[in-house]
Amino acid sequence: MTVAKEKAKRLLNLPAIVKIKTQRGKSETAKGQITSLFPNVFSVTFEDGKARTFSYADILTGAIKFLNPSKTEDNSETKDKEPLTTKNPSCDG
Image (tube, rainbow, N blue to C red; front, side):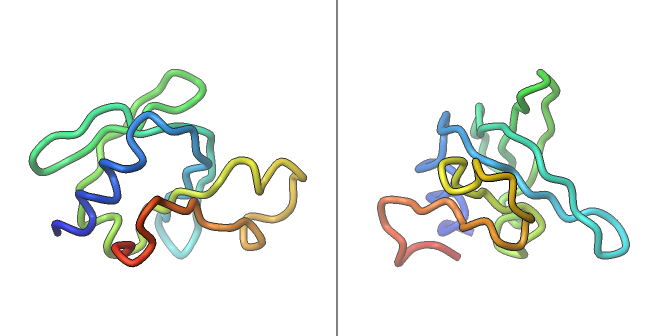
C-alpha cells in the first residue's frame, strides 16, 4: 500500500486525465486532480467541481488510473492515451 500512497503523493495537485473503472468492464474518463490525501483514502476533484474519494487499493488494482493530459489533447481514444509518468517510475504499482 505504501507504493500507492507514494504515487498519490507525487501526483498531488497535478492536472491529469482520470480514468475510473466502473461496473461491467466500462470506464469513465474526466479531467481532474488529487486534491487531498488521508491515511486510508485520497480525494480527486474533477473539472466540473465534483469530488470523489478512492482508496489507495484502487491505484494498486487499476480501478483508477491517471493519464498525462499533455499526451491526450488530440482527442484520441482512451486506450491510446499514455499513463501519467511520475518522478520515480520504479515505484509505480
